[in-house]
Length: 145
Image (cartoon, rainbow, N blue to C red; front, side, top):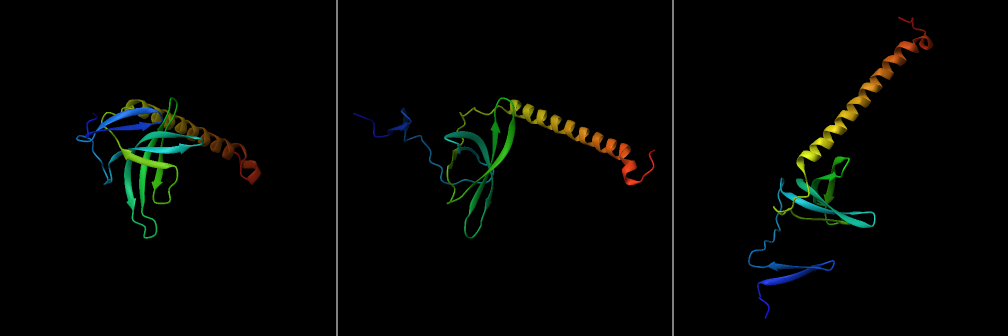
């Protein structure tokens, strides 16, 4: 005889037992709540760690704004998702304290690498500008210094 407090949920062939006495249903979210966000990526879905950063109380289409980290082996990028009644291929759920798919030091390291690369790009552009101003001054009727 099955316990009336236990419910079996099947997700893509994986069966999970849920104890209804201890499970928690969250229907209310607030700014700052950590969430998992499921987003369709081409033909499949991918789950990301996210944080609710705002509720836009538009009269026609109230919208929840979620910042999430798209993190892989070589890049970390903060992206934004907008969840409302017309959103397709996007879902959120509360972040479970046992979920550990986000590594802070790895993400910060990747963001630091991106910052370094962009700073190098800026330095290179400044050098090109300086070269242009110096070497092409004759085209503008300016005396070369």
